[in-house]
Image (cartoon, rainbow, N blue to C red; front, side):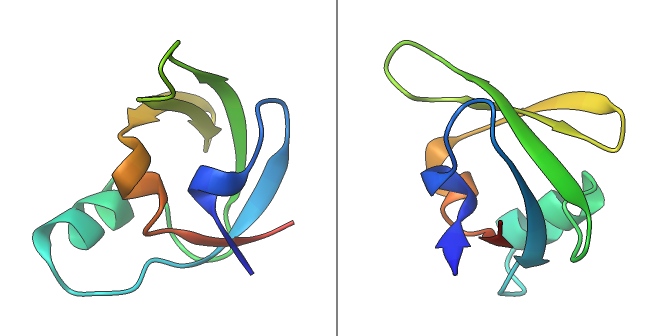
Length: 74
């Protein structure tokens, strides 16, 4: 399995897990990054941070280190 950080621009993946019970993991779940949801990476800032995603019909930007917490399957 890969992390969301490893997915390239223009690719899609399915969320497998957002491990942990810390504030960051819970916030990612609240923003819609829940297991089974399809997510597309639509862009990255010039230095790679943040990562822009399309999930559940809206766009979301998260930090690269937050994307590394999310496990996905392609």
